Amino acid sequence: MERKSILRRAADAFDIPADVGGGILHIEISGRQEVFVENHKGILMLSEEEVEISSGRGTVTVFGTKLSVLAMNTEEVRISGEIESIRFGE
Image (cartoon, rainbow, N blue to C red; front, side, top):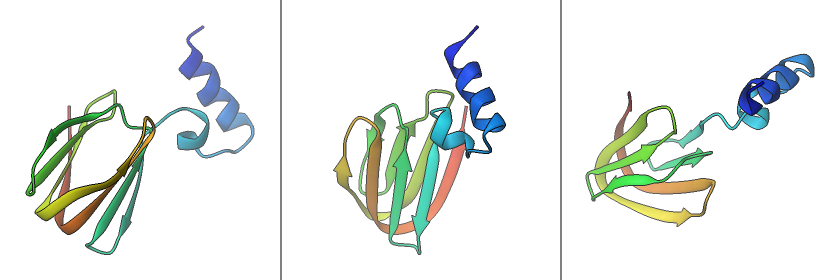
């Protein structure tokens, strides 16, 4: 049985949010100034107007102006700037 499937079933059984137990992408937005992405698989593209992040199953692109990466590690990335929109892609 696949590991993600086991984690997802355990999260469901114990009423734990799926992003905690299953490595699913978790996004928090603070106003229009900051985006926090957890469980990412890397940054694919970075500019002051666009940040494209791999989710493992697709992409998440943050659009805006004066965008920058405040912090990043293997699991989390924090983007700041003037956020205009966020798009999910395949």
